[in-house]
Image: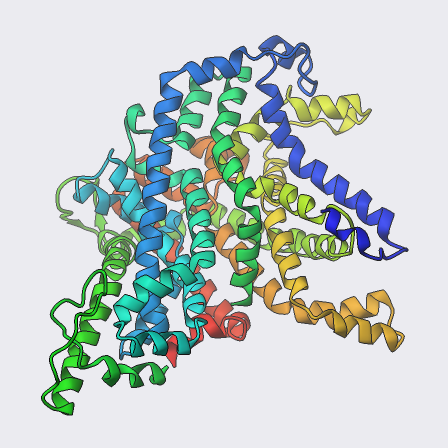
Length: 280
Length: 340
């Protein structure tokens, strides 16, 4: 941020650029702030002045949510699902990307096209038949019924991002490893995994946020409140307490907090990873 | 890539007894002959490929490809989701879908959202990216803040906006305070307005992503080009039009592709804000909403599967056309290489 002090500004457009940037940021952030601040208000404050600020600030809504067993149960479910899906996607994706990047075999082209084609078929479109498959496996109302399909649908992006990454590892490193007597699998575990960390981190973060925010699959698969993830929880909560707007806002902002924190911590990686993905 | 195979005989003579996890190659017995070694090398190679790619391929086939095939099968039945389907109806489901005025309506909504998302977000994102790509302070903070709506889940965005947009909600209140009371409206339930409201929320949610992509694209354009043009006397606008925009082409095309796919599958926001039934009367229901309402919520899994197949085919056609005519050059590392 302050590193740009030395830059020579373009004289003509500068104030305008700042103005537009501020305006744009305001538009992007205000609705989110409304949710967070609304949680600090009371319902009467909200109904007398819907667009006002908290006056006085009330923490009871947040405390109530933080004390509720429902919230933490759903929070835990979301964490379990997101972590398991992310780890599954990264592990399976890394393995298959390694094969696609550094082995040569007849079906390679077909295999790559298969995964690349998956990019075009998002989960929503396949949700009805997917539900039937999960139901036939007896995984309805089971977190595994969310985790496994999320891994499957996460693979295309993972493969697309990781294959160029793994292909870019210089051949010399592999040859040196093989001269030292390391098998290609050994090379995979000892060299590829550490070297591909930046790509893995990008894929992992995207997977985690995607899972954290996923709505349609849990909507189909999870029936009982005990198994709800946070998106389902937010929806259930907001229809259960539809008159208690402040409480809904508090619940909602606490539900988005982890993904936001995760994003804030890794934002450089995410933005950088997107750059890499665009360059192909 | 064939060079990769060339290294094979080198590690061919290694033992294939424990090629698995850990990868610690135990020292090998001497190979009897080069041919045998090569054969063993190839077997080992095949084993490695199967070991590494097997799990991903199986999971992907079972949960992405197989369900789609299954949908094609169930789509020919009237079936309520229990037991094996027996009530074969041929193409009747498809006939019903294509002649249902409600489906034609959702198709229209989806088309409107798809086209207008491109037309609204694209130029706006490019303009904002050009503006933010200047050397101004706090660029990294700006990048984070404009990405916030994209990171917040659809459910939360939907819940928040539906509270704000109620007729006695924050948006109307704000307009009143700003002296723009005449602009107050029934944002969500006025059927003339609702789809524009939806479009506004979509633009708000996804524009940050578009801007970040465009910024990334801009940063990969060498600065020397515009500097050279500047020396030759080109104006700022000439540089943007003749140099920056053409070079931004690949980024724009990839963004547009992602946007199109996103529009085709739009579901969460509409379902949260309007619900499947209100969306119908408010004029915001999409293909996916129709599928969920007519399929799962009505218990008609055969019909729902047929809708899935129709959506699938539409996406496939769009994706293939797009790839064929626009995207091919940009994804050369990704999709075309598979075919080579």
